Image 1 (cartoon, rainbow, N blue to C red):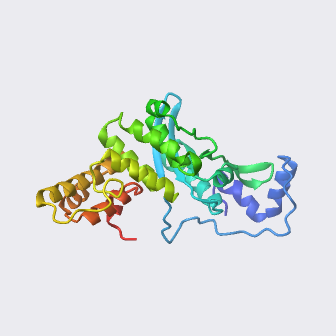
Image 2: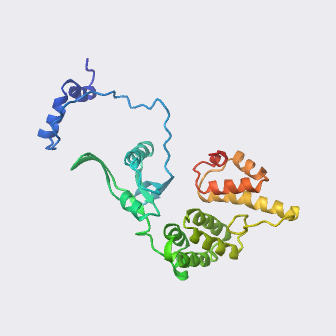
Length: 298
């Protein structure tokens, strides 16, 4: 028995599935193809098994024109699975926060950038029910900044330039300009930017150029950029100083990225005296979305 108008309005199509395609064609003028068969499916969309779905970075932006959710996805290569996951992310976030989601994809690959920039269209061609248009940042549209003065004018953009263009014949000029520009900002911010760039450089020559530049600048944390070989027999006080500096670096990276740091996480990091362990946590701090993930072994 049909108990409400809401129920009646959709159950009529369960009774006569052909009516739905007839309505699409005759009422809406949508050229929906004549189905060979129509089958009713389970309407319960509840996920019994928990499914882990994570975006890379999620930011909430309040503007004069409203509130937006900025969904940032780092994409290394073409991945057809994103055709399903990206629309899911946006729909879920809109339903949860009631804010307009904006998908931003960042990549170091021109091929991946061209793929990611293609709209994802779900539904009948020409009458799509859902269209997702990613905004893509990549080597074809991020400015190539290889001039010191230009890098100094906008250091974060120069960092992004190094992260997306840090390969090939322009790598040395880009990295040298950025290294000089980093001297003009506060040391803590510069230290975080340095590690971001180091993590993104995949070209061995470019990575070595960067580490040589950073070694010359004598950044203070124990990292391959600043110190390739430790001397034996350093006094205990200096060893403790390096431990403390590295622990502070782990926490600063998390805080700079806006990742909440609980008292338990802070205490565990501060209590660690193993430089190698702290180095591992520092590298993870650049990528994790939850501070507790520092301690999860892959």
